[in-house]
Length: 197
Image (cartoon, rainbow, N blue to C red; front, side, top):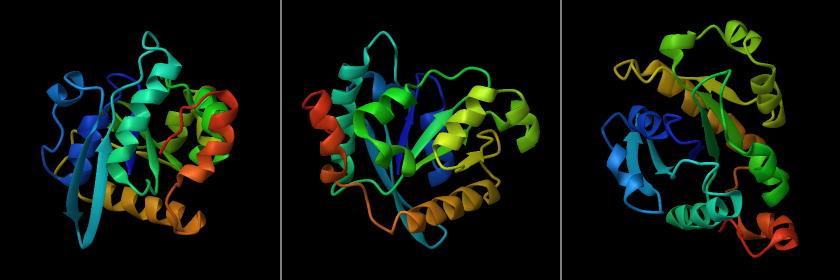
């Protein structure tokens, strides 16, 4: 899985919660344009998590695409799922529409929205959605695939188990395959030479 999101969204913390250890630190992404790959066993499943540099509007979308391409080379032949980390129902600044326009529908078809700060927002899904029509629209664009996380409850394995179950369903829905370069070239070549893989 590849973790996407804005700066400070909680990607590294979520990666740590998923893997059950301090796999990603705050210093990792600051010192390099690439992300970091960590492999681990969660229950009886072997998983790979790639933490990417956070999207920053000051960076510019095309530059972000170039850096994302480097990050995705860490999970060749391609990722099975993208996890878009959103820290707040009211405030998130990830260019999902640009991502869609840039790389086509295959990205959103393989994206699960992970809402962090469940300690602040609670895990009451209706309450979270009532706070933000933009979040509801984002989740709808991603095929209704979402999960609410509380990174303060690292000792609670049920939220990770539930997340992995949802990811498994999403992967099955997309035919078990990973994202390939060909899936993105059609859209990517129309805009410029920035391809995901």
